[in-house]
Image (cartoon, rainbow, N blue to C red):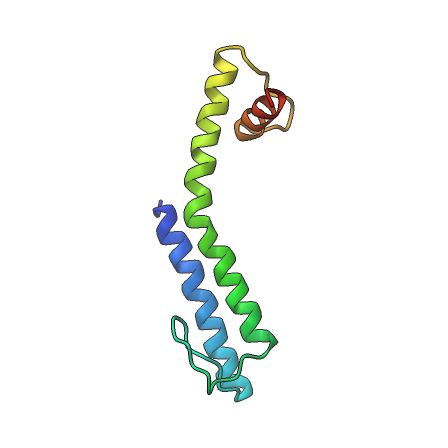
Length: 102
């Protein structure tokens, strides 16, 4: 199985490829990724791709945090400090426990 960072990298790569292919298809000169090109067209499609890449990039931070939070939740359940409800993840249980202590 691929490392999660490789999966995220591939998702971002596919988004940029999608923009490139769409630009070729409709003849719109959109900016390349990782470049600020004021002369290029930043239409709604390019802005959507930028937002999608930004959101996908957030996964670099969110995935490790989710893993850690799940580990905390698992430990809280094992210690009997909280319970896991049906359909609830360990990270949900950890957050519920922390929120109950505020």
